[in-house]
Each structure stands twice: as C-alpha cells, then as structure tokens.
Image (cartoon, rainbow, N blue to C red):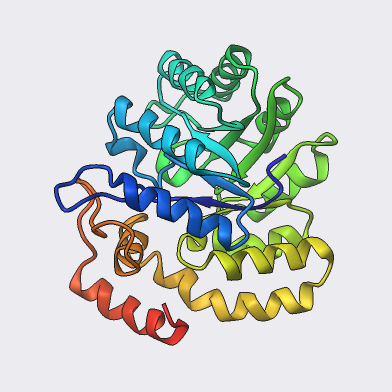
Length: 289
C-alpha cells in the first residue's frame, strides 16, 4: 500500500516558533510535484515529540487537506499504548490513509509487550498500521520473529525498518507473508535493501531532493538498478551530510535555506552548529541545493 517513495516531512516553524502553515502547504505541493507517493507528517523528522497534541493533529489536518495525489501516512505513536490508541483514532478521523506507529520508547518493553502494543493499536482503527522499528531512538529492537508475528496481525500492513541490521531486515523480507511491505527507514540503505526485495523508503533526504529520490526508487522498482545506482552515488554525500548532527537538525537547516520555515527546530534540539554548516554547506553547493 505504501510502496515507493515516502517523505518523512519536516514541520516548518515560524521565527516565533509556531507551526508555519503556509510553508507546510507549500512543502506538500513541492513533494507532490516531484513524484513523492506518500507524505509522512509527525514522525521523528517532523518533531512529533515537540508538538502538542493540538499541533500534532493540526499538522496532519493540513497535510490531508493539501494533498491531492499523495497518500498520507500519519505519525501517531507513543510509548504509552493508551495514548497511541487515542492519537491513532484522532488521525483516522482526519482522513489519513494509514498510521506510522513507533515502537514504545524509553520503557523498553519485552517482545510480548511490543506485540500487544501494536495489536491494540491495529484493533482500535480501521486503517492500515505501519510499524516503525528504530532501536537507536527507542532503546529496544523489534526482533524479526516479533515483526513476522505482527505481519500476520490483521491491520498491520508494513514495517519501516531503521534498525540498520541488514541480516534482520533480510530475514523479514524472506519470511514475510504475501502483501506485507518492508520499507527502508535509512536513506543510505535504500538501494541495497530494495535490491533484496524491500518495497520502498520513508526518507528524510527526499524533503529537499524529492525528484531524485523518487526517480531512484522507481528505477529500482522497474528493474533498472544500474541507472538507480548512478543516482545513488550522486546522493551519497547527502546521506552523510544530513546526519552530521541529530536528525532533524540538518534537514531543518536545509529546508530553511530552501524557504520552508525558519530552519530552526524546537528545544531540546538546537540549530545546526557552525561546524555542522561547514560540513554540510559544500555538499549542498555541489548538489545545487
């Protein structure tokens, strides 16, 4: 359902640190004009952890209202199952196509607890749920066995895999049931994972170069991996540059340069440092960004 290129869009802020609705609407248009299949508001790149519940829902509402072609996969996760269910239901009411739900962070549940958490979310809504596995942020990994158990759960349609564990991801690809999608959660691993059978990417990089990321992904899906590899090599400096500091600090800076918001995240995230700019600016210059 979410095969192809999805963008984990930033949440633009004004200079007064409010949600910049005008920039957000222009960002949706920019993404759609450049071939993005799915928009993902209020993920970690969208600073969901720093948004109030009211802001969170307003951002989703704007994206749903503005999108004309792209699907909307809304971030609606929490480390509390009951809160995740509430957010999921509210996002469903706004008309999203699916929910991106992060594995519970900080609390470090057992694998059984992770399974029960996602099952409760899936049972609470009538739209597809994409599980988000990112151990570097949550403090716990969803194992391949647990993920495959979730893949057999009604309502759970895909995983965004950002564990960086290639063996684990390949095991999920190999053993998954028919129709269950595996999406790369790491831009730099998109090409190798898709060559191995993954279905697409939920990308940070496509905020600023949606055309190039979308083209690469669709070339892989069409079987033209040689052409995709050429684009991948061109994008590789940006894979590194956008993570010189914690995501979404660098991409917020880039998008601010492009006119989408102030370019400054909310505390405790800080603006890109001078050292970070010295590393990133030459890459942006070389790529014409």
